[in-house]
Image (tube, rainbow, N blue to C red):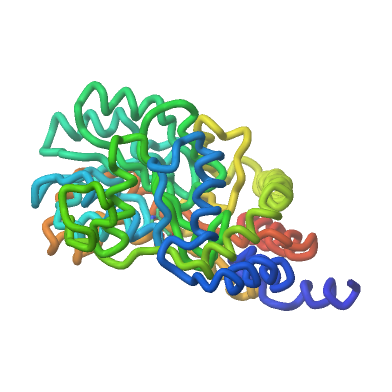
Length: 387
Ligand SMILES: Cc1ncc(COP(=O)(O)O)c(C=O)c1O
């Protein structure tokens, strides 16, 4: 213990440390997989994982499909909407690149919109404004940095406009729920996420047939329904291989066993760091404001806005000198990505996203972060911003 403390006082503090299950926790699941001699193709562990997710989201089996990662989940969910080629999909400019690349790879055109100044989310109101200014055929808001959306508000938007909405909730497992509303959510189970499978994801959708179509497209597009219109094995669509393997399901099921305890610990750690950083730099830090589930949040990242670009750079340099990891999350913003413009993306004005890209910074945050590591992060922020 003493040795670990001494090491934490000098060793680099990483930005993230994946909270993967230990080999001991994983072992019984691997034994089960091997006993069944089933390693992929919708095996017993994938089915067990899907059943657990269906219980959590209170949806029947046909409304949920696992996939090999969220990027393919987004692509296939878009494909399952069967929009005409070149249809316009509204996405936030402030997001991870996969949101926009999924739209392009699905043969559609991203329309890059701004986000709300407080929640950093593309809201139904922003979407309504965009619809009045340009062509929009579907909307793909993002649960930005894990912040959940009010799904009742998006359900209302869908009913009012007739436009389908797919929420990229890649970083929001444990925070984003349907809560009785209808809607479509795509989650990531990447190693850096709240419930890690290594690689993986799943799609939850109350839209009739959408999750079933995603499942079919994730299995090359092959018809496996003996009562379907097509012969068994015939292509019902141009799909891909986006199946989750039994190995990945084993990791997710093992991670699920410790998820509740770890989520509580992450929440407590976040509250401690949040209070200590605000005390270290009084009035200087700005934070993403809570969504509808703000009070029960299960954070996986620590991200804040500095007063301006200069002070962000000063802090980045101080962190680098102290061996503390930082990240400019979601930057450059999508509006500044030449490749997306070349792919035909339509860029709307995005002053909030541009402002975020000037002063937003991620600091270390991970399950098991020690008091010594936390104190080092707080000290560097206090020293850097006091200058
Ligand atoms: C907003 C967003 N969308 C999509 C993805 C892609 O998820 P995956 O790595 O499972 O493909 C991520 C991953 O971090 C993300 O943050």
